[in-house]
Image (tube, rainbow, N blue to C red; front, side, top):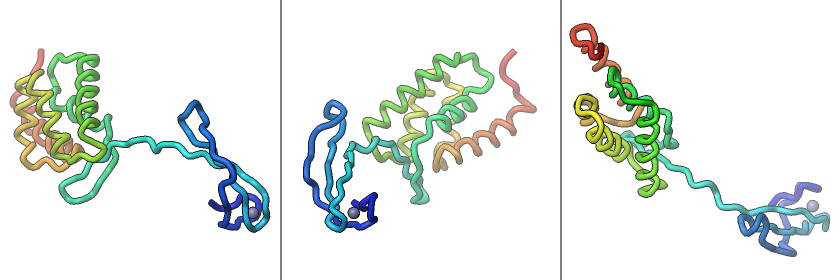
Length: 158
Ligand SMILES: [Zn+2]
């Protein structure tokens, strides 16, 4: 650990004890170069959910993107915001149980399963682009194109 007083990277731990009710470990350190002391805290890194795309890139799971994708698939339907929120909650929970690393394919499969239970039309829309699904961004783009094509001839709703 680099010393905040003299910038040397040479120290020893002189004391370790629990802090934040066990949520952290506080370490008292002494710099070998200047003999001054400083404190560090060790905490568990927040567990993030990471999505691996088929092209090999990885990105943090983005709840908003999943929600946007679902909203597009449900466009014209009468599904309430509360139901969509619950749906995204369940998808996120299921993915976190599989995480911290999941594939875009797994994200797609969870969205698909959730849509199938809720809305057959939305499920079919999603399924028709799913075979080329590479991530929510691609999904949104393809679904957007699909919906744009459909809208002039067949508009759902009232
Ligand atoms: Zn120092």
